[in-house]
Length: 142
Image 1 (spheres, helix red, strand yellow):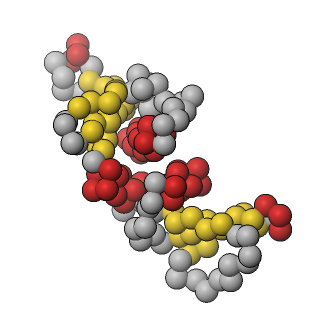
Image 2 (cartoon, rainbow, N blue to C red; image 1 turned 90 degrees about the vertical axis):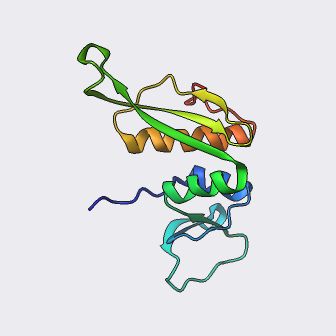
């Protein structure tokens, strides 16, 4: 059984700014003035203090599904094939492409290889969120 990867706090903030209203199992609560910075399960009972920001923490897969449905962007995660082996074996590295579904235009392919599928998928999510926010992160090579 695999563990579902939850978005990072930074991704949650960007999703919120883009209007994410989907379901999530966890919520991040933050209020720097009172030193609050924690994750709580959405099923838990908790009191939201004045000035406290809350952000939903969906899985990466759910966030990507929402971006496809609401913003017409999708991420394709692909392996780095070893051409010498006749495309039969993966080198263990993963990359991604992001596409605008309205015209099937590729917005870029990652030039950074990642150690596993989940890292490439999360990096792809970062790039789409930054692209839609019109702020390219230093970690995004697109």
